[in-house]
Image (spheres, rainbow, N blue to C red):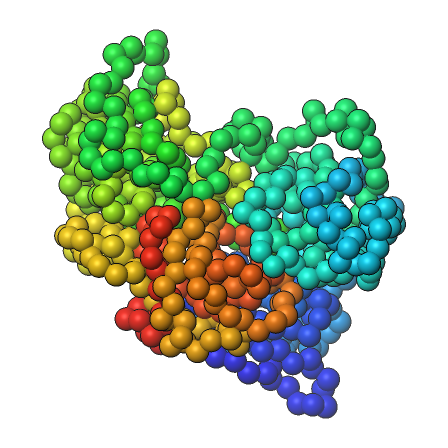
Length: 610
């Protein structure tokens, strides 16, 4: 689905091209940043309820919708074209103040409202950037600090702003291989932009320095410091000056109550997988009882495995200001276990990485498990998957280590009651938003997010109540390594995919790509599955930063493909050559480091009617 906008040559309407972007999005190519801001503002005023997110970027606008269904993509394309023709082509693009108001501010930024960010210029890439530009280290610092910058648009992560006004001598392509983790506060450049990483996250920009400024705070109104239209200057300071101000820093995670943003969340899936079975978790549980529990039913956390997170269906509608959707890595399985216990589809549940969770019930409960089969037991009695199970006061629920797959989901009737952040109870490992990871000694209070009576999920059902096809598998989710009965399978995991909006950047035929056997890297996590192995060739050149979706297969110039999962960045600057189908995304969420993978646009999941 692509083509120019309606209009005759005589009316001077700039052309736009629409690309299908997976099963629930379109990407609109536009001629310049002014056109992007115009279409973005117009869509926000005219978009119907089924449009979930509008994400502006350097030369594109991403439109995502829900629910999925036949003809929705065509309906979205028609909406974009009609909006462009009526709202944009008939008038001037919005000013910086219009864009500022779209970001959630009531008043235009005054010209004198210049944000001054103090920077220690000691970045890891400073010397390499000097060599690449033919400048000295001091000249790079001087030119960057002399710039007068304006926030063009948000994206990538909460509080991240793309700033224009960079000295042409400092324009550099993104790094060939992105870093798995860029420190919070890093001041960086890439393409014609400069920006600051609000929190530690993956990134491929050149690191010049660092600041201690708090760029995003959910308790501030508006949360983002770098809003479109705001003027920014970088002020060089010495290390001693910056150290004296560091105590004022509070991350987005700290505002959400997760220990000042320093929560020890693994940046990658553990490479050493515990032995499967009940012996992987404690067989004896503490007998000490806390002096007091909440009056409502709750769970006492006795032990956790590598990582246990609270997740729901995520934060929709905030992508334009850099807030990722996040949510369960497999939304369909979350819906199934919630339906099994009689919860609302989006009730918060526990997402458990490689088992190891041990809970003691305080009060009566109803629970259901789904995802990777972790051999769970309740007081020694096996717990089946996707079946509501009654739990009495004092009972102990243990989750062993799954023999295949990576993640399991535990729903409790009523949902896990933690304070929502921007409308969701999900923890986002990329941005730090949401509740902290669950730890031994925590007490998890049960909420009231019920919707009907408990019922087992019917075979083949995906638990969907909003029309979204999340592609859940029957029975136990197998991660592509076993059948639905748990019998071992041979060969690589095959991930069906559809052509991405930048498929023309791939320097391989689809047949050649399908023959490549790639391996899951230990650097993988909820943000992305990173694949290594044979070279996946691509044409030279970068694309401007543009919106991302779950399942997007991004291709850096060096290194293997990056397959984005639930906690993906809002925008990215490497070409997306393919997008996983919904059922392939389910399998991707279950991949372990070392698993063999093939990307196949011809696979059984790659049906053209998505």
